[in-house]
View 1 (cartoon, rainbow, N blue to C red):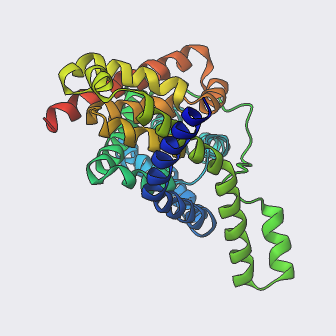
View 2: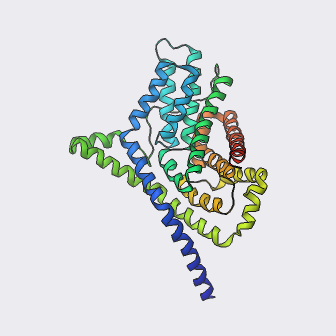
Length: 331
């Protein structure tokens, strides 16, 4: 019995160590990149979004809004107060007509949808899956943001889609943002450069703390999967021979398994190596973050029950369509 346990431990450690070596630097550089954007570029990103609000460029603003959502480093509980402040400012700006304020909801929808699905560190981390997966994830998330914006534009142009009454403009996201009080105290006590460096190190440390455990758990689950799940059985469910059902399964599995984006990359790597279609991976990468429990809790507050279920249906349908298109393209 002891020999069996020892043998299995060696096997699992072998799979664990190999995948750790393959993925670790992508994860570490992703955290470093996310912290860099959070400290040095976050305010510029939000200023660019404010320009979209003030210019009132209409439906065209959906496209840059979706792109800004991807590069924004904030988590959902940090994004919603920012979106609330933009929405309130758009509604109360001098000369703004009610229809124009409501049409800005489409821009907000594009920004929030793409922000839910992807962020800079997760995008870099996805490079561990290879260039095709990286491109597919970026394009599908970008298009999903645009599609969400278009849906709100056409169906809620003169109606309220969001309800930000419970939010103010102050954003707090412990894993990725710094409080204003920390910044002011740092600037008074150290030089300007040292202040940014301290904030960067704090942000990097919080990112590591927030994702490190899930990263290791993901690699462990991947090692267990490689050891105990027959590759042929997995390929028969998610592979090219069963693409339709495989898409549905991948989209469904993404809901309970997606707790942290970083923790799912090792699993996706193992699944792709075991025969999962790229379309199945694309569907998983959309439904996972879209139905992440923490994101759903925040979204339900600002959407209300009816619009909340519309959001879920939209995410699932888009995931399945994206997966089908990807499977056709890479066949």
